[in-house]
Image (cartoon, rainbow, N blue to C red; front, side):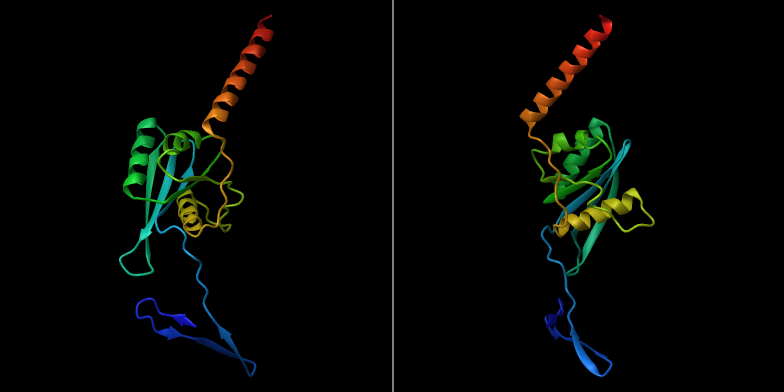
Length: 175
């Protein structure tokens, strides 16, 4: 049995097929995050879709903005997301372009870096804006798993060992 959100009145859908009657109920996905953001990050910028509750019950507004990749723009984006009171930010990026966005925001926001393979939208007209909106929808319903992002001490150790490897190779090349 379904209920209308506005009135609370029960609604039952029935369909007659070939003489028999089948009962259908519309299923709605459980909403886990009322305020969610989806970010599609590229080399030059990040498209951000913020999904917030609408004026009518059961509706949601989506606001799409474009932010640059400079540290000043990332800082402004961070403040924007804090002001919007988002409970989760789902981000998808090519290569390592996610790092300048992720690291400054990880202490204040609940961030989820997701693999593009698992957050795929329907094939067809694929744009960064559509991807950001799709990520916001997936995040709101809890349908994506975060990728592993190592904690800061491990990241520092990795950077140190990689730098040492580069210096060792450079020294060997000079010799």
